[in-house]
Amino acid sequence: MAVTPLSVYEPGRTDFISKLPVEILITILSFLGMEEAIRTSVLSRRWRDMWTYTRRLSFDDAQLVYDRFPTERVEAKFVHWVNHILESHQGTNIDEFEVCFNVNEGDSKSDIDGWIAFSLRKRVKRLYVDFTTFHKISQQGKYKLTTEFLSIYNLDSLTVLYLNSVEVTGKVVEYILSHCPFLEVLNVTDSNSLLHLKVLGSSLKLKSLEILDCNLLKDIKIAAKHLVSFEYSGPIISISLINTPSLTEIRVGAMFFVKNIYQLSGCLSQLEVLELDFLTVKDIKIFRTLIRLPVLRNLKQLELRLNRLSNIFYCISLLKVFPQLRTLIVEMSRSNSSAIDESEKIKYKFGKMEEHEEKQHKCLKVIEVSGYKGVEGVDAMLLLWLLRRAGSYDDLVIAVEEEESKDAFAIFAKSVLALKVKKIGPKAELVFSTLSNLKELSSIS
Image (cartoon, rainbow, N blue to C red; front, side, top):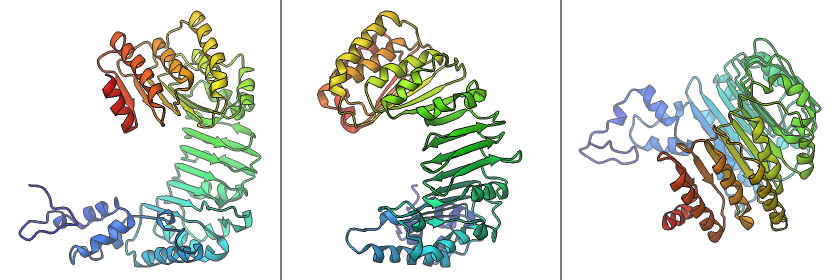
């Protein structure tokens, strides 16, 4: 017998869900959105206040309609709604608290202080604060998190902390790290108050560190033996890595990688995942100066983000220093105005590679490409070149995303299907993410 949905009541049918223990019901509610959880209060007397014990609170003003009413009116309504929910909450603790708000600190500072204070009093484990604005505001207009404020509360329940468009200094970050003994994930995005960052301490449990778009940052020093993943985007600065034996994932820009190749040398041999952003042609030229890039025998996944077709040629030449590579992810930027002009030159270079590069990448099994455009056949040439050099196709996955032209896609699909018949094993998958692509592929096959 099917269980009656929470939102439907039919006389004579047993309501199995409402008979579950309270703790299980609260857990179920914690998987729902805030408005969905509140709507369950009309189901029965037992459900009336159940939502006030939910362990996950998520507020996002992106759901509000800004273009129909004045911004100030919408923001005031959002603030009132959040305050009302928090005042109604009766649970003793929460697992997750998330707030995304188009903030103006001058108008909302006391309310925001109250929201963060609420989450800390409730012993929150995962705290996500995103104050990204729709319009440019000065650094003074952003919400500032201070050690004076944090010192009032106990922070030792935090395991995940995301601070987006929250102004924090290096001293504040150090305070957080020293007072959050179980913190495993830290993300700081878009903070111009962050000038110097030190992530130091033998007792740190930190496993993931993401520092993104902090445009006035000058240097980073890291000594964290449990750190597994490091991601950075922003100005080309110096980094110091000391005692990072667990670091296996790095996601940075190519220029940053080149500048800090010596500082990173101690952990390169242990890397399993490497993501490089090649944002300009200059990045490629500088990267090519690294003639003695060491062979990374443990690297399993390489992610390349490119903005020019010509960069493909230089980037795939990196494969020879990654003999155990299993997954290759290539993301092409949509801004590619010179693609047609470059295509003939790239085809010529691929032809030369066909003549002289016969090395098989026997471990390569997954290729994911986004931003495929089918420009003059160059994108397809890259994929087919890689396919012919993979050693085994038993679990090969090709994910081609974005909106390519129908003709270019048809040519590529036929080439792949032909290759599948000849070389790809019975377990191979060809995955095309858009619905129209799937229809086209099925019609071709």
